[in-house]
Length: 348
Image 1 (tube, rainbow, N blue to C red):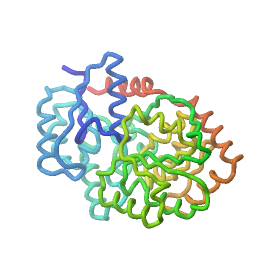
Image 2: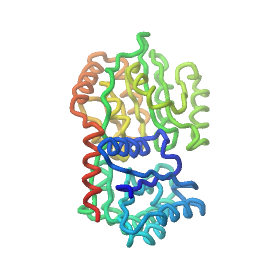
Image 3: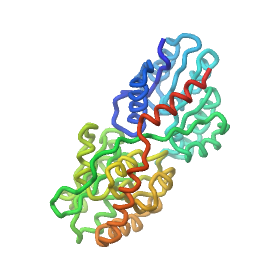
């Protein structure tokens, strides 16, 4: 029998923050001798269809009584009845990157529906692991007692120092799935007001999660005639991302909300200064000395922050030095996995 089974929505190999966190934790624990099964569920999430419901029920039914299961919040938040059905015979841990109700673009009825279902699902599990102190505090609104929560922040792999691409033109990098919560449309708008300055910007991230939004971003790039300056590169393999960071001059994440913001620490792991927002945990993920934080959704503030980075060499150098200093204080995935394993051993 495995030490625990990790259950996620869809393909476990997806290259987004939550899935990368899950995969890195599993990889590090396996290297430490743990036996872990990973199950990817078919169906639609987070608003589950019949296929998703059947998939989660089948995955949990297959586990022997007393087994440990970790269910990613994306897979369990909309299926509280199934979690409740198995909670009395399994030791279930919820892994919450951020509440489903906090996703940008939801209407009030959708938010309320997610809040109710996720509160119910979280009440059924034995413990909850979250990836930031911000999310731990946020779960008080979902009636989760603090003594049932373990905060295990992501680790990071230190990469080569960022040094630009040698062209002399500042290269901006944004790595995030194209989705409304990530705010790439705001970045395009801000950059459209800085066309008198030299810069290039690469947007890396899945284009198929919110295809209508991706089309909006494409159309905005075309409307502002920025097709030669902003590139939509789609998802990129993990092994190539370190080189992307190394060849960049500035990392930008204009998200409305993040439960942690792993790409921020990945940028810092390359000594790359950052412009981001104060949305969710981002206010705490980025040290004040390593970049500029602006209110989420505020295009003028985002534009002005980018302009300062592009036109004030001393300010830029100060934040670059701050990012390089922060690089030396980052935790690795081995430490994160050790904390995760300790939390799992405390379950019955």
